[in-house]
Amino acid sequence: MVSAQFFLSPHRITLLAAVFLFVLASVAIPSEDIPDQYPQSPLYKKPVEVIPGVFTAIGATAPPTYENSGHNNNLSFIVTGEGVVVVNAGATDILAKALHSEIKIITDEPVVMVVNENGQGHAMLGNGYWIDQGVKVLAHIDAANQFEDYGHNILNNMRRYNRDKAAGSRVELPSETFEDSFSFNLGRFEIEVLHLGPAHSPGDISVFLPNESLVIAGDIAFHERLLPIFSETIISDWIETWDNEFESLGAAYVIPGHGHPTNMAQVRRYTRDYLLHLRQVVGDLLKSGGDLQDSYYVDQSAFKNLDTFEELAKRNAGMVFEQMEFE
Image (cartoon, rainbow, N blue to C red; front, side):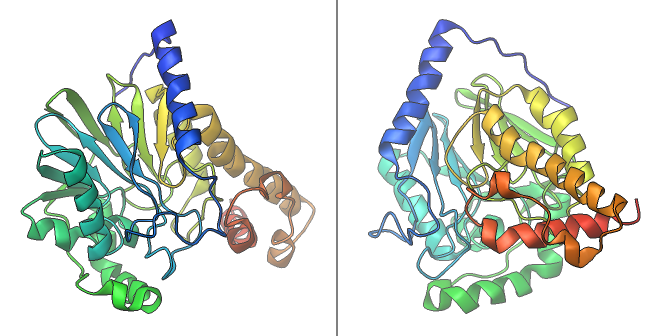
């Protein structure tokens, strides 16, 4: 397990403040009601530079739709000085190509690696485009297995909402996998691709830049949209991974899987603390003899300001009830 000590010097505090002010000034407030913030591109938003050399194209906080072209997660990249590392292949070929076009505007350096943050469509369905460019695609072995088993269903679901925008997209497995970590130096960056433990979905990874105290967290961390809980999401394990591994990275900058770059306190509040809250209210319901139907109405009002709350809150509570019923 890789850990990092980080001490906030006055220079770091100033830089951190500047980053957040820049992000707030340069991007619109996230909303499920805004269908597209970059109409001249299939990308939902134009990439922004979070810290020198690290960029992210922030996706919609709404579910994937034709209007947002399936770009509802963050597509990030690191310009190292000796090549570009991309985090997430994109949900379609057209998104992968659009991101590549933006990278070419910023730098002449070639893309040398794409990292899939998990086995979901928005992380992997663009793999084919990148592999056709001769780029190595890296993922955790569990994410690769998940995509191999369910990739064609994921592709067909994407085709249903994206219609003509799905053209050219295909199921393409990553070209390389790992189990615990994959670390390397490229240009001026030390890059650690880490599987910290069970979290949101099989094979979740985070990309950590220890010298910059920045983590591209992937779907272990949420803060502007309500996180989804799937049948394979064991929230007690997610909390344990958070407490024992993710938080100990000590990252000052967090690029979450969805939403604007932020800090550890903010993603803790809307990820770990939300999971703990669900376990508390559902646990109280079980003690009082409540059933699955009752679980849909447990109090989650502290999180109702988050996008996708209406779509996910009741389902999340039901999933947690089913997990805790036989603990």
